Image 1 (cartoon, rainbow, N blue to C red):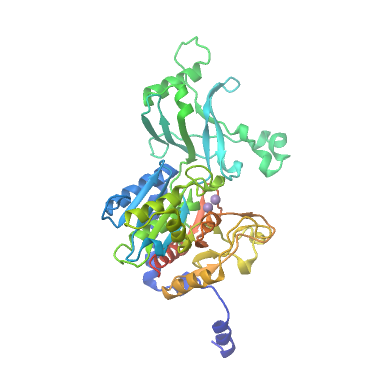
Image 2 (tube, rainbow, N blue to C red; image 1 turned 90 degrees about the horizontal axis):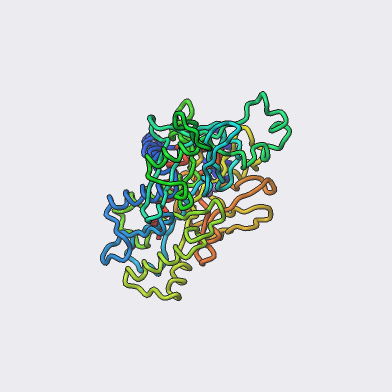
Length: 470
Ligand code: MN
Ligand code: MN
């Protein structure tokens, strides 16, 4: 290396490529870490399934429901769709917690509440749908979908449905129009309008009772099959939450196998890295209380009783104070949040080789360069975002540097290109220091999101170091 080059690298900020700089055992660890991650993505395709997976793991690690005296490892699940877990530190909880907060909902296509109908023109039974979150509708047609969710029957009993994941189970298709006949119907339209949401009906079934004279015999037969298999009637759909998700499994991607492709990585990649970071810190006995928060409804604005705007996380921390024998008054709860430091664990957009123009390269996240931090999200003139304080960013970077975590800084895209938000501002409204910090994905919100194993692993290491920091 020439002298002038050496001087430049000493003074300038340059992100490091994990595969260039990480030690061989770290590189191997990154590949190993991705194996159970893929299994998680395949088991946790919905919010409720993610909660069930997490609770199962917490129980294995001897966590108990908050309120059980004496336990330092506690959790709460609320309405089956949001949860928080904590490991109580040696200092009072009111000194502030170290929290990593991810969301566990992902864009999907829901069945409507009264979905089933017989289409006379095609002589098929179909299901009407209503999409959830920011999807590009054309991606959801002509692709195998599985049906997940719950049905609460009239007597209050709960039926859990998962159909289309196993090899011997059928999958569902929303057929796309053949190109031969798409000239007027699709090709003259904008990409966003080419698939109308009212034409996203899935083909459910086609058979009928032999020799029947019944009207709508195909729909009737579908109802009979549903009743045989699940014991439900048509009105049970009204009290159901049934979701269509991609029927394919997460798997390695790229010739070198250095990436993972799979559905729902926004934001379950941050949920998984946060969860495993907490569990791998159980032996450390840190001063500050470690908290992981999984919120719901982020993709539709974080509203409702399971979204980040809800009472839930405040109630959890309040209950944690009481659990630890501390004052759980409103004043002490406020003080606890104001003493807390939080990573808003959400994905960001990595540069896609086909569309580099939507990013400003110097301030964008690039695959294989580690966990991505974003001082702010939002759009335009930084509207609708948390804007992390410089003091807190410096602190987080100190934590990462001390632990040898590969990290980089990046905005979501060019300033006036578009934008997006996270739950960071919602938690910052409570007074905590909050920084957006997560994995850069390609193809975010698609059925097949792509991540780098180097970034996946670096994010896990980053959260792990942050959770035990003072
Ligand atoms: Mn997200
Ligand atoms: Mn999203």
